[in-house]
Amino acid sequence: MDVVGDEPDMLEQMATAEQVEQLRKGVRACLTDQERQVIVLRYGLDGEKPCRQREVASRCGVSRSYVSRIEKRALEKLRQYLE
Image (tube, rainbow, N blue to C red; front, top):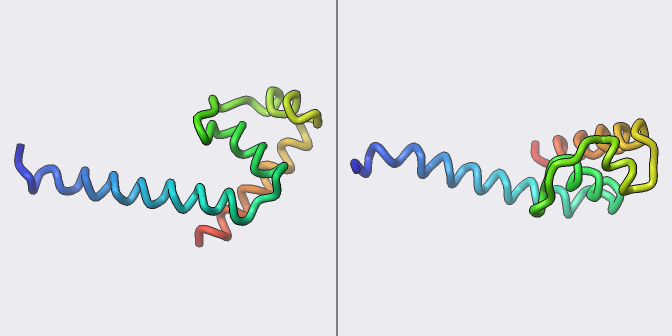
């Protein structure tokens, strides 16, 4: 294998690893416990399997529409954190 040919893949993996770590920091730093739980369940973070809004609502004891509002608010906070 050519080292130069592997370089973009390695750089992409490093960038992706940095982005994932930034996202994890953002989830811990700027979200409430409820927002964090919804995002972890919805997107399968921390080894969880991604869940549908209906499943998240059932596990959190809230309505599906409330899960949608929590998710939207949390994603906006994360977007601002990552900018």
